[in-house]
Amino acid sequence: MDGQDLQHWTQANKPPVERIVRLMIEITQAIGFAHQQALVHRDLKPGNILIDREGHAHVGDFGLPEEDDVEAAGADSGVPALAVAKVDDGKSSAASLSHPTH
Image (tube, rainbow, N blue to C red; front, side):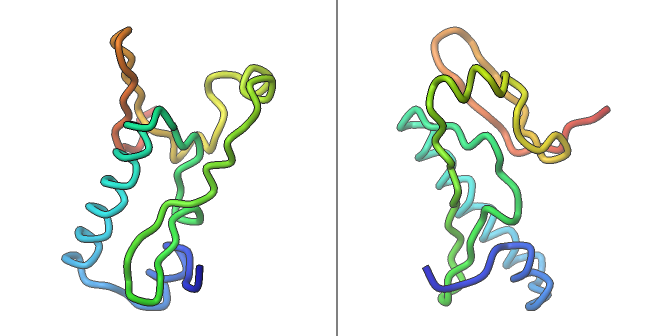
């Protein structure tokens, strides 16, 4: 895909808040779709969100690991400062975009 990651795109374009909100909606819709497919992005960060030439957001680098890789990495793998809050009610698993507090 031709475009830039979110970090570089925001630095180069200095978008207004309204544009960032629209991108966040696209990102949350993409993550919601992935969750409906039973996929969890364990490393969501600006470098893994791509903005195409038309200005639309795409979530990339799911890096779908093998089962042995997940067990070896442990449940808390990923970038801690950008980790998502996870909820597991025993029936389904959901995540919310948030910044963890220490």
